Amino acid sequence: MKRLAMLLLAVSSMALISGCGDSKKAFDKKYDKAFIDSWKSKFISSCVGGDNRKSAICHCVANKSIESLSVEQLNDAEVIKEKIVPQCRE
Image 1: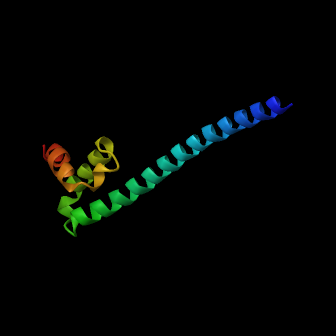
Image 2: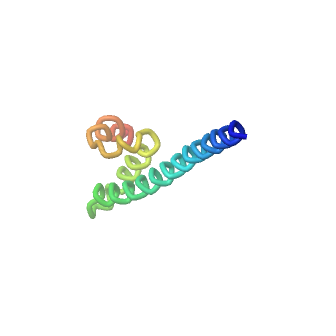
Image 3: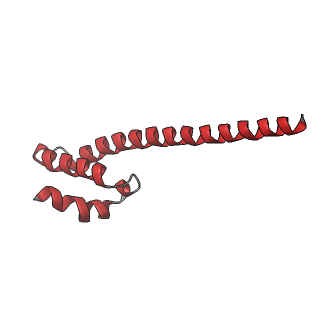
């Protein structure tokens, strides 16, 4: 009986741990999406700076940055300047 209880405890613990991993992944995905949406809005507003002639290139840089950079890299202006801006100037 004691072995059965230990086995059930082990199986339920593994199931709980497995479920927590899925919850973390879902949370991370939602957090990243919220961060990206906020970053894009702030980036475009800052980039355009009231000059609507810059709108097209600012949107290009924002979209290409989101497509090809990690969430961490979105805060690195040098990476965006070196890797993304040249693609939008072509």
